[in-house]
Length: 452
Image 1: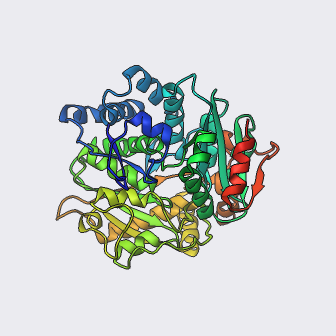
Image 2: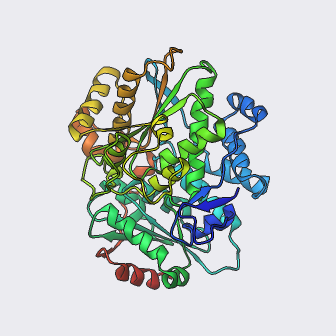
Image 3: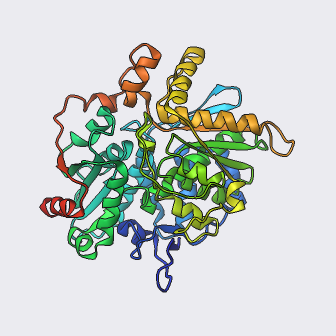
């Protein structure tokens, strides 16, 4: 796979997957994107419906990465990372939940983080200085990355998070591990955590001194494995309705998940697939898709806190894929983007109603982010029951987190407690260790210098 920067750099240039994986961010400050995504060969595509999820993931990974990564390393990374189920569950006629929360931290980010950790461990030079993985989290990334890299030799992990603005159970998953994991609580919002991470990568001296790389979805090594479950959903539905339109609703904050879906669409040649970018009241991208211009702004706090992002960094990748520079969105989205992605945003009141209503009618509990995705999908399917007079569209909501991670929101709506899964229960009583800093690069630099 040849990768380029969304900024192009002064002279352009390409990078290998290994180079991009270990760099995290392009040297010119842009994000790595595939130079091209050729469609999966017909013979490989035809086999997907008969395979398991890890087998499908291996087919897609080998296609995207070519022969750059030996098959044995790739096979071990895929099967080691994806050792938990990813069921597709129909909850209403034509509406399915793709349950991505059965991994060790009960969030969809386990899939990308575990694959990335295995690839970094396998591909980095063993005699190189220790690598520092820096990640900003609005909730689930922190736990997934911390667990994926915990106690891996030669790798240190630093998690930036907004103090008091992630759920207590999310916080417990990355502040109780210790070892090679350092949690840094920033006295500000997630957007400032993300800004600090960008500034750290843009500082050549700090970046070299700490040997920094990223574990956020700005790292192509975490983004690409997120394509696996889109292919999985398509293959599961293709068994029974190969010609129906597929509509995928993606709860969206920093927009890495939607970016991966669009890459998967190109890799599969999923001509019938379209997407809903479902957000909470942080509606920067839905506003843009509706023709109201791209205007990043400070994020608003909501009950779907992992999507409280006012300046989504991965949207630069999406713009680049559809012919933009990735830096200037302009006032009107490219028509090719608008035909494939619809935006919708939802209030906390609507989200709460969705959670309560689904429980009362179906006995199904969902977290606030999944509820936002479900609201977006229902609206889209009402407006587009079928494509061009074809069979009724089939919808998939990416169920991104176990509802127990947001018990303080969900349980009062259900009127009863939610059983706590093992990946959460085992950390609840552990002592929480974190360093508290203000939102300044100098403060972060001192933390990075003090890590051993």
